[in-house]
Image 1 (spheres, rainbow, N blue to C red):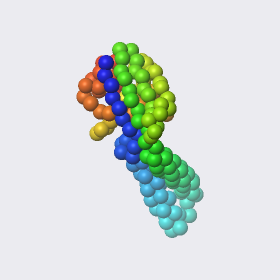
Image 2 (cartoon, rainbow, N blue to C red):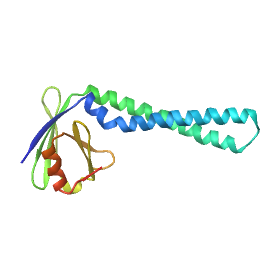
Image 3 (cartoon, rainbow, N blue to C red):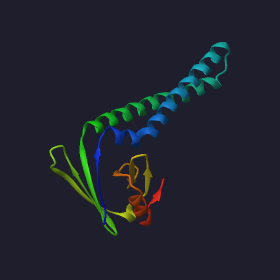
Length: 156
């Protein structure tokens, strides 16, 4: 069938995590603004309802900061690895081989199309999702995209 090769690098990781990073930044900035606004209002008047609001949005602020930290850390660590993934497609499944910088095979995975949850298309890549945590990057091509859709994989 068809073959493709992709290298896990900074560009690939940035495309995959871009929306998550934006969401984390929005949570941090939004919750910070609410906490500051409610704190100013609370200083000007005594209302205990707003103490609960500060606690909730304070939690969201801390959660957003933690999320932001992990996203940035994962982006940096994944960008340092130059893992190449070669994928070969067959009728019912595909085989994905991972190679390190020295071109030594790290892993071989055989996955069936029926097990894929969905796919996400970005500017340069197609990402296949097996579950909420496992993703296989592929170099984007219209022929490959149509082939994957014909196998019943839904686009996100």
